[in-house]
Image (cartoon, rainbow, N blue to C red):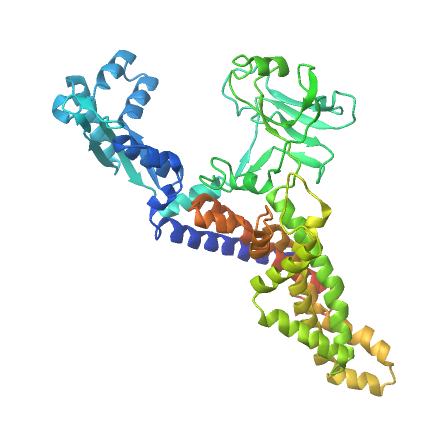
Length: 523
């Protein structure tokens, strides 16, 4: 079994790399990288050379190329001590055209050009754009920069090697006093009166590395961070994983005790505090609340995260589908060609024949006429608004389970071993429970983990029809907005879930049927 799991994990890991690699090729090689500015309002407001600079800086930020400006080059020389600040200032005097550069600027422009050309960069200089013979146009200042496209293999390597980041007490570069970890049984967030173990750090990026609270899964950690990539249009500047897992809706306020002892009604989540240098002294609000520079906190919101909404709806629909589909499929098989079997067949054919979008809208109209909410409102949530999405997701799954259970059971009922059992004097009930059902249920069991994990990915059509703020719409939204970071991150997330569901399905089959073994000895 151990050997099988290791082999499966290795194959799965390789499959994930291949899938993500293919998606990266499609995005970064075959799609025009100008598309990422289609919905960038800031880019559309810029003009002339400033627009060019912004374009290249965005391409660098999102992994297309390496981009260095002449001014950055001079600052790097000054910071390393190779030139003085006065020399840097003199060398920065780039003219509107090359023949108007100062002598010092010409010297360092030549060094900049030679240095980066030798490293394989393309050097580009754009002269000043003039509104009048003596006035530079808006955004028309002269610019000089070097750039080099990032090879796909390098981009993929950087992506996978930076998937996980580990917090440590040497993360903060500034002087923060004594660095180390602190363990407490009474979390200061709760005023030090509630038993709630926590591990806090000083010198780390996060103030809280491990803590307990009253929200699922109750134990939380910031020691290891998953970095799926940064969004630049769907949720600008936020990591894909945070986009999927951060809570949504209106602020949820509660009594919060700040490190200084100040207690007030607030939505601040102190467990998410991260370090920002000099942030306490630069703000009166921060100095009143915090005793260190761990002042950057997220807020608590009243709704679930995108994955949360998708999972709640998905897991209930999966449970409902198995509770209805399996018994109905069994009854159809046992009552083959009878009225209930024919009615079940009609339902199955209806679900298969009618496009999903059509019957989802049909259920939406029927539910709306019955007084059920037809759209989600995360600011005023009710239990009733979950009903229609759950029904819309469950009913197709019910039909699918009915179809396959019926088929598997009828196949088993016509098997030779069933005929032999009958001739041996076993009752129909014993044959059914000990043989037919046990064998027919094995393929169904294999699909349970996949159905459960698929709940995390959401349902695209259902969530769009009922305006559910779940994960199902995230990928299509990212594609529409050319948000490549989200596309790659969500693809990786889906690929991992697929591999895990396949492995768990195999293990479930082995648990249900002892004849199935993954060890070499059994072969």
